[in-house]
Length: 208
Image (cartoon, rainbow, N blue to C red; front, side, top):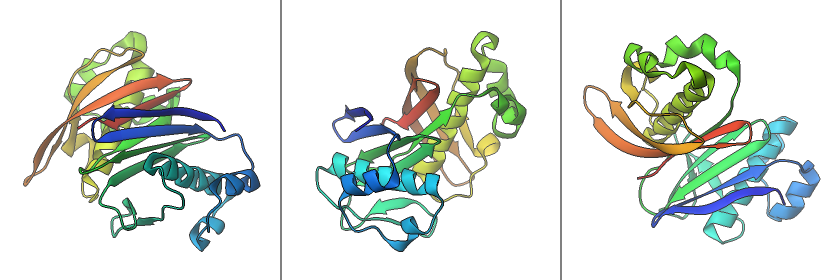
C-alpha cells in the first residue's frame, strides 16, 4: 500500500499520508468494512479519497472499521471516540491527523503557481510583505495550508482567512514550524503548526 507517512507528532497526536494508486475495488478490499451510501454515491476521485481517509483513520486508531461522521459544521469526527480528527485530500494525496484530547487541523495542497492569483484574497497586507520572492509559490502554499489547518481546527466556519486567521513571518524551507493565530471579537487563539514539503505537495498540521 502506498503509505507515505505514519508518524507521531507529539505525545497526543499522530498523522498519516496516503498516495492513491489503487482502484476503488482494491481500496474496498483493504478497508474491509461496510461503506455507507454517502461514499458510494460520490464521483470516482472523491470516492477514492474518502475510502483512503477511512483506511488511514483505522490505521491511526489501530482498530478496524472506525465510523466517520460529520457534525453541523461539516467537521469530521469518529463515532464513539473522544479523540479529534482532521482530514485533507488533494488529487492523489490524503492526509489524516488525530489528537487524543484536543481539536486539530491538517491540510495538504499541490504546489501550483495559480495560487498567486488568489493571494490577496486570503493574505493580509502584512503577510504579503513577509513573502520571500525566491520561494514565493511554496510560501504562499504554506500560508494557505496553515490557514486551512487553523480553519479546520476552529471547526465552526464564520472565519475569514484574511481577517481572522494569521500566520507569523517564517523562512520557507523543506520543513519547519509556524505560529498561527485565530482572532475574532470573542476569541484569540494561538497555535503552533508544522509544515513539510512532500513531493510536489505542501503539508501543514496543528502541533498543539
